[in-house]
Amino acid sequence: MKAVVVVFPGTNRERDMAIALERATGRKPVMLFHRETALPAGTDLVVLPGGFSYGDYLRCGAMAAQSPIMREVAGFAAKGGHVLGVCNGFQILCEAGLLPGALLRNASLRFLSMDCHMRVERAGTPYTAHWQQGAVFRAPMAHGDGNFFCDDETHARLVAENLVAFRYCTPEGTLTDAANRNGARDNIAGIVSPNLRVCGLMPHPEDLVDPLMGGTDGLPMFTSLVDSLAAA
Image 1 (cartoon, one colour):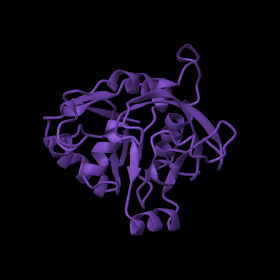
Image 2 (cartoon, rainbow, N blue to C red):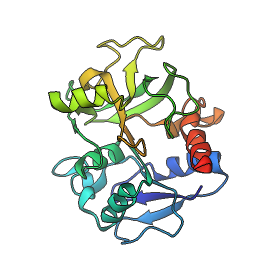
Image 3 (cartoon, rainbow, N blue to C red):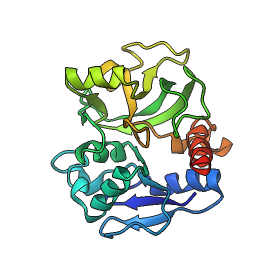
Image 4 (cartoon, rainbow, N blue to C red):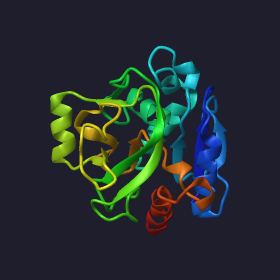
């Protein structure tokens, strides 16, 4: 699997993502600066990592969504390519129109930096194939604008088409307001596109892929991608 990690001014999780991808694939990903105008030949996966692209001016991800490489990422996705956006990457995907909804200020109006738990709502996708339906895993969150919002029509479509990939929950898997620390609508932590090829989520599974990191809860996302892309 040939993975590409896009680096924007202010990105700060690209090395974490590279570690996770190399752990799963055995290959170092390509680090691609946002001003490039083409993806490397043979790209299988594009990852938009976390951070504070362009200092989060205007809206988080709004300026990065206009970067030259994003035209290529949009074209790659339109052709069925796999694209993963984590935290700021999720914000960029929404701003670029590759996923619906928006990420608003946390309900507390405070930056949140802590572990959270997520429940797998849609098993069998390229991003969740190594989890069972309803599995619960831990991941760090670190964001000030992670409050997923969408209008009623979009929410109804996400639910009807089973496009909610992850929801915030307790360690036991119960959906509660207390577990939904940023106030996201319907506890939504991550979603997928209708063709299941584009995925965005706010917490950071890449930060739990090795026992030295404190656990391997996030590793199944990356091994799922390896096996799913190999099968494709």
